[in-house]
Image (tube, rainbow, N blue to C red; front, side, top):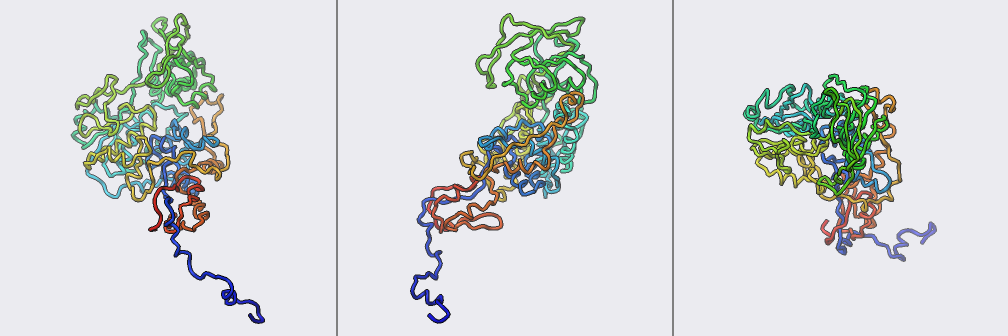
Amino acid sequence: MNGHGITIEDIKKIVPFSQGSTEIFLTGLWSSRKPIHLDKTSPCRQACPVGNDISRAFYEASMGHYDEALRIFRQDNPLPGVCGRVCYHPCESQCNRKYYDEAVNIRGFERFLADNGKVDIGRERPALLRKEKVAIVGSGPAGLSAAYHLARLGFSVTILEALPMAGGMLRYGIPEYRLPKGILDKEISYIQELGVEIKTGVTVGKDLSLSETRKDYQAIFLAIGAHSGMQLGLEGEDLLGVMDGITYLRTINLGKKVRLGKKIAVIGGGNTAIDCARTARRLGAKDITVIYRRTRAEMPALAEDVDGLEREGIKIELLAAPKRLISENGKISGVECLRMKLGEADTTGRPSPFPVEGSEFIVPVDAMIAAIGQAPEAAFVKELGISISKNNVIQISSETTATSVDGVFAGGDGAGTKAFVADAIASGKLGALAVYCYFEGKDVKKELKNHQIGNQQSFSFQHFLNPKHYPVDLKKVVPYEKINTLCFPHGVRHNNPESVPPKEAVKTFREGTSGIEASRMPFEIYRCFKCGTCTHCDLCFLLCPDISIIKGTDGYTIKTDFCKGCGQCATTCPRNVIEMVEGPGGNT
């Protein structure tokens, strides 16, 4: 001690003072648990037939990287602008956010990216081109998807399309007010930029035999769709004024005029039936009745489209089915219907309808459109010995898309896939994987299992292309209970606004909804939990009591020599990226 006060050296003489490092104490050796930091799978992704990496796309968008977010979608889906408009969005029904307030508008987000993001197709071109040539018969969603992914794998791909323009049911079966043709054209152009050749006006089985096609190409993927309308099985379906739904929509989309009159009955409850009714309304019909044999809850059509139909003044006659067609001078003049009651569930899971005796009633009409389903026109494939069902559906292995003939694969509606755009895209992607495995001599079932998402048949094409640079546990799906909701404020969902009022909508085929405004989109992006995707929020790093989590430029590492296994990091992780597993600590 001196006149200047107490020095550090003086303190050391009277107070215990550690001058070493606590790193000599390997506290991790005390632990029977250790944390694992690894991205997982969101439930929305597991529910998506296409397998879109939704949470990662939301994360990139939250950083302002909209182009990269779009690229993530396009790793598995070549048609995000299409799906952003017409997909039945099963992803949203499994969104963890719905248990907190409302599901995130995932479909609206996909549309926003497709409409506003930039596509660098050069990044998708393969470094090496293969010598094998693959023919794809049909250019609907399954055919376009197969072509896109095969081109990314380096194959020489040619699409053979019977109709004047590519798109299949997307172009000829969906009205413009739901899916503008310009959006479809843009996404097809990206596929062509990958080197895919599209030959239109070529009907395989007529202009070109399937056996000739088999000689010119080393593999074939049949994506023929289901373009033949099913009949009701009633006498009089050949009357003037009677059409099937898919023929009606195709005729309109080909630019031809169809005059059906003012009073129209549409039979069916799916999207084709709803599209027919709303299209007829736009073409001048005033009195339209949709007749469906079950209740509204069982209608296969998207609820938002049924809502739109009712806003446009179109009636729905529920629990009713046609019994016979009434004619006058060789033309339909009415539909006699029966009231129905519901019984036990059938194979679709919906209750079976049964007629109520003595409940007949008549709907006067000028025309009737039967939209109760479609069937493929697949008779031509028998030329090669390919097996088809009694309903003309091409018989395939659902796990491999392989037909009964070597080197020939099939997918989409023509092969019995669910009649939704997303499911057709998924089957085309699986078909591309199957063709690749066919040439490489690999087991497609094994490859599918290696890259399978959750417990569904969808798989990650990005993981298939580069698994080492895509560290994620595809099998572990994050449940809502594992989300740390304390980290997320409640927020209102942002829906896609109507762009045309109902009174004007019935006079135009202009798109009925617009995209979420750019000023509002960040709020919807923020609502996403980003389940299973590390967003580098630093909570684990900041709250670790042992300072055993090290932050690096590309993520976090855990020094297990010092981690006591308290679980603080796993508990506070907002998105269940970190979890505790049994096992001794130490050996960082």
